[in-house]
Image (cartoon, rainbow, N blue to C red):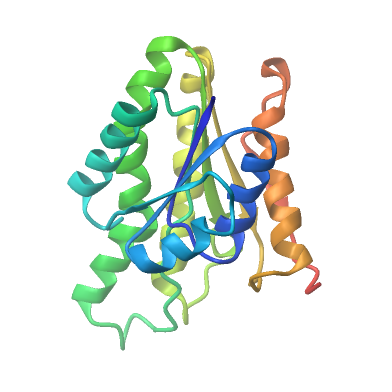
Length: 216
């Protein structure tokens, strides 16, 4: 059975995307800092697993990836969905919280790819999915840390795409251009967009899908 690991599993995009992969025959492993909540989410997807990880801690991310590989074998799909949406201007946000935000919003993604990519590249197959955001395209001064983080996510996807494609690994992002609420049609459509990227034939791989929420 193929394995899908999501880091930063929440009740919105994360849950719907995990459910989509599970419905398509994948073993799903959901991970986040709040283990109790993650177990609740996993309980809604038959056969799924819950794990705890602090996305701000690169070693914790590496240990999670290694643990999943040791228990289930290859990670076929790695999905980084963690992010901190903080309403704060540069003049008002404390530097320690700003640095923590960046560690979660982009640092954890780099740590996850660093941990999972070697095995994917060695076997010549795998998908890395990154949850992007519209603030990468239009940064907002009131949401500066997430704006910088999503710009980093987009750069990471674009920067790795060509090199990883040569090694048989598809790196792709869905840039969600707006806020979405859990349990809505938007979250389901975003999950479908992630599945569509993953399912593309290799000669049609693309690096980004832009999704504009409808509010539905």
